[in-house]
Amino acid sequence: MNMNDYENKLKELGIAFIKAEHPDLRTPAEVQSYLGLTLADGLSTMIMKIDDRFIAVIRRDDCRLDFKKLKKELKCKSIRMANDEEFEKITGMPIGAARVYNPNLKTYLDNKLFEKEFLTGGTGSFICSFRYKTEDLKKIPVSEICDITEDFSKKEKIVFSGIQPSGNLHIGNYIGAVRQWAAGQDEGLNIFCVVDMHAITVSQDPKTLAQRTKEIAAILLAAGIDPQKSLLFVQSHNPDHANLGWVLNCYLSMGQMSRMTQYKEKSEGKESVSVGLFDYPALMAADILLYDTTEVPVGEDQKQHVELTRDVAERFNAKYGETFVLPEPVVPKVGGRVMSLVDPTKKMSKSDANPNGAIGLLEDPKIARKKIMSAVTDSGNEVKLDWKNKPGISNLLEIYSQISGEQYSGGNNYGEFKLAVADVVEKFLINFQQKYKEISESGKLESVLEIGAKRSYEISHRKLLEVYDKVGFVRL
Ligand code: TYM
Image 1 (cartoon, rainbow, N blue to C red):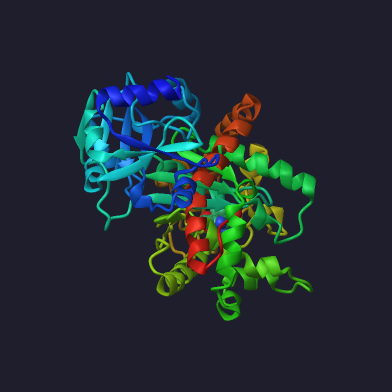
Image 2: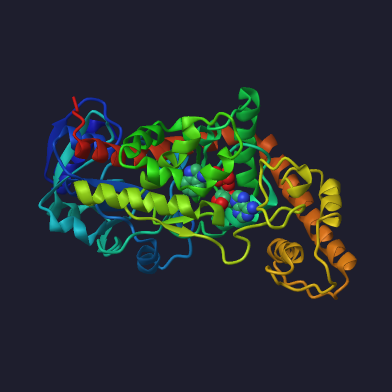
């Protein structure tokens, strides 16, 4: 349906609207800002797949969909946003240009739309929008009014986490972080990022960095991150991260930054340390705050950075009014700190000088086996969880339970116990690497990252513009 036909169809249906022309603008935030409107003056049509059919959902731009309410209302098992391909096929429009009327789709209208007399929304074109008389939207054929957005006081679950493409990813990263990411994807909005800009805070070989960035993205997919459910992208592909990072820099103090344990650890004994390494938590705060993140699933070592993120968000909110959501770090009760196999008082780390301390996810399973067999254990011969007196055995017990999903129930013989851990880890690595190989060879990685970057920007840019306005940056 071209623009003329669409306008005629709306008139025929009795839906009143006023046309507003503007330059080519791709996101609702840009359109609203150009037209001098606020988020609460805009509406968006979202195409969603519920079970095996598609529907359209219209909500006000300042309201968030509540997936639980939506599931209940639609009595469906699964629900997700249509991907770019599906969107274009169903609406005949480029992504981002949805109209309120979509023939052949049942349309659900959120109740809160009707609190406003007029709302501005998409037309299928990026160079004009329509200001609709909201009451008339009830005339959209095959539509239903329902209550599907969140109370303003309650925040939708938005998960953000990141991982650096430096060094080899190890089972500590998997147990402490990535596995949780995959497990939580069915609820809320989940965003995962390969943080290449963080990686260059220490010296990197360019070729290796590029290769590792792709490798880690493929590892995340192999670990169960599903691009149909979550966004996955590379940090340097979305410029908003560095831009907000700069702004936040100006609201963090040198004192706060120098208290960061990770900075102290990473800079210890080094003759020269980059400003980036010192400043890195500002960029990490930007990563998190751009998306109104409510939860940040991380290992124990990153908790302090998330707390700093809350601090800077609070400081900014206090000065400029409610802008950022305060995120919660979510550290797993078990496995939040997997320790080195050669020194169980230190965490397993990508940058450990001794390669026997960590087991890489892409490491030869036979070598991994040997590392477990020669892992440092403790005196005595009891196989029991006792972090104070038996850190080596406790670490192996946690690795065993987290990788196998079961508690170790064998006897007290250290040799037998290590064999059991080695078996579980070897089997896990063989399966994992098979999945990794399939994903790397599928050729789909680039398009997943491209979609992730585009979608993440659509969300983050709105927040960045809000921040720019608040701090007084002029818009042209
Ligand atoms: P990074 O890349 O060092 O580690 C990625 C994730 O793995 C967790 N982790 C561990 N968990 C358990 N045991 C271990 N031995 C272990 N080692 C690492 C980390 O806690 C982390 O969750 N600054 C972050 C990356 C980042 C980020 C973000 C995270 C950048 N922006 C925004 C969350 C939100 C880092 O260097 O993680």
